[in-house]
Image (cartoon, rainbow, N blue to C red):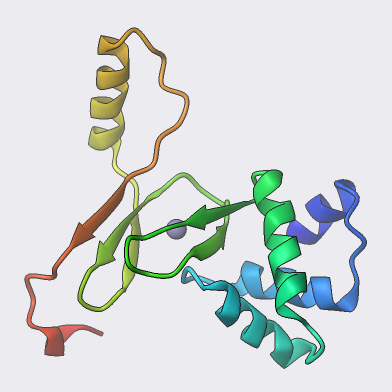
Length: 137
Ligand SMILES: [Zn+2]
């Protein structure tokens, strides 16, 4: 799917670019640019950090990927596959994705109070687990 979209948008799908897109498609975490490069190098050792950076810029420009700054964590990326928010564990750096109808309703109401129709929003929550550290998976 991501390969087709990129081709439609005029990206020439070189082996290196395919490797990066494959890594992003397979990722279910929110990898850093360095992690994306090292995973892509397992498919093609010639993938450079510049290549990864350019692909991420391309994807973000076309709203196919999202760039996140989660506080003290380094910049993270993910494909833009579904509307969701993030809960970041400030101790472990673990990132949990969630969606919430009640949150959507509340935010829509706030926008309405200011005379706006809500177009988009994202929340990044930062929390500390109530479970002891040893219980983290
Ligand atoms: Zn996410």
